[in-house]
Length: 114
Length: 115
Image 1 (cartoon, rainbow over the protein chains, first blue to last red):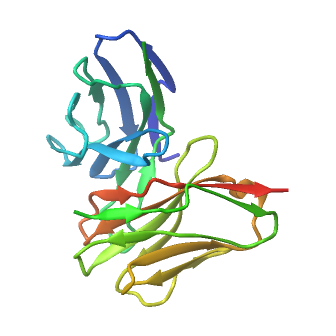
Image 2: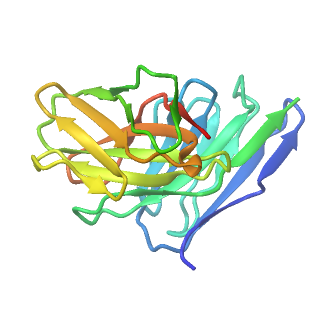
């Protein structure tokens, strides 16, 4: 089955530690995205990548980093510089084929930092 | 910058009734796409319906339909014959142009279907 996997589903870290969230897709999509979801704030874009070895900052990139070494993978690192890292993180990918644009989402990772 | 506004944080509807969720957006683009996504308690985001701005005909998908008013920049979602499984967060989203890149999401409407 084609889809997006995110692991783990729940992640706990101590304050001051970097943590990497995994995102893998087998949909052969060029574009991939990372969103942060907080109650009452919808989905906010952290980073996106339209092609391997290239990525752009979204609206809330501070304290996060990404890499895109393979088409299938787009890991997100939450660094110790992120002031409020506890949140639900969603990874997505999309096709650039008109007119059936759609973002496909993974199941998400709930990160708790204490 | 594009903005998407959902002014109804929470709504409820009786099972089998009809409910309409509101969405407005602000853009200077002439070519764009609009979407409604559903996020049930499992938190898996699912596409409900898609509308292309250059198409005047409103999109429909079974019990889900939209009322797209381009001049008013309004994109509401109508759910007919509401079912318990429709209980979820609903997000309106905007994508500009044909590049298939950045989506802009609203803050969501939490819909509860009451048995």
